[in-house]
Image 1: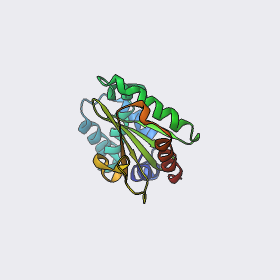
Image 2 (image 1 turned 90 degrees about the vertical axis):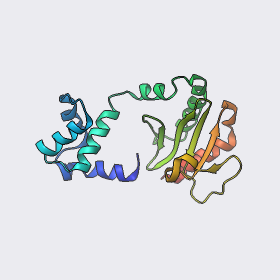
Image 3 (image 1 turned 45 degrees about the horizontal axis):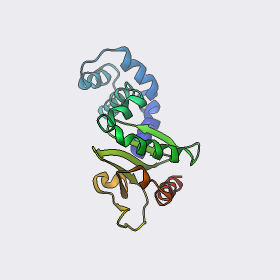
Image 4 (image 1 turned 60 degrees about the horizontal axis):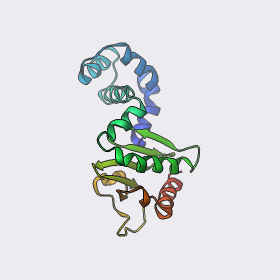
Length: 180
């Protein structure tokens, strides 16, 4: 989760009168056909500002699918990439108990106090691993961030499980350590 979103969630009780979890219960108790209907409801019935209303509705929708479902959907038709994903997750889980793995619709964010990596099945034959390694030089393998833009500083393209080697794990661990 990015810092701005986390700040918004942290400020939600003070600014809206309820926590995100409380708002999710309210949203789930209603049957809104469209995102905009739920946003309008929060704005008119609960006097929530547009930014908070949109965030509440968006985050409520994300949770409607389980983490496993989100990951399964990302790799649908790309089953041969799952061993790469699983090995990355297994490696990261060994870094510490403070690792948060957050599946989203198109990628999985890896966070500590801050996001340190993103795993995204970018094509039918490749996973892009985005890393936050500010100040680290690019190499032939450790490329600039590419499609990740400013979300990450570097990218590694993975097409084979054997590419998850000591060097790659060291980069992941370095990104994790910088996310204190």
